[in-house]
Image (cartoon, rainbow, N blue to C red; front, side, top):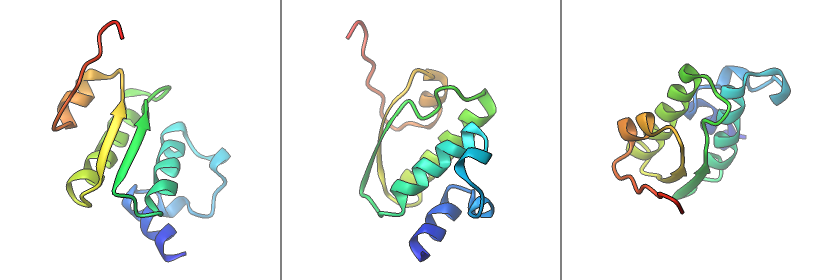
Length: 100
C-alpha cells in the first residue's frame, strides 16, 4: 500500500485514491496508468502516445509528470508521441521516424 500511495503522490493524484478510474478525467486516467507502473519501481517506462485524446492542458500535465519521473526519480522514459512541440520541450533526446 505504501508504494501505491507513493506512486499516486508522484503523479499528483493521491487525492483521487478512493475514486473509481471511471469517475476521473482522461488526463487523470493516464496518470492512474502511469502510477500503476510506477508502483513497481521500474528503471524504465515505455509509453505509447500517453497524451492521445487529451486536451492541450492535460497533455502538458502528463508531460510534466513524465519529465519529473526522469529528472527527479532517474527513471528512463521511452515514448512514442505525435505532439512534437511538447516532446521537444521536455525530452533530452528525440528520434523522429518519417515514413516508417
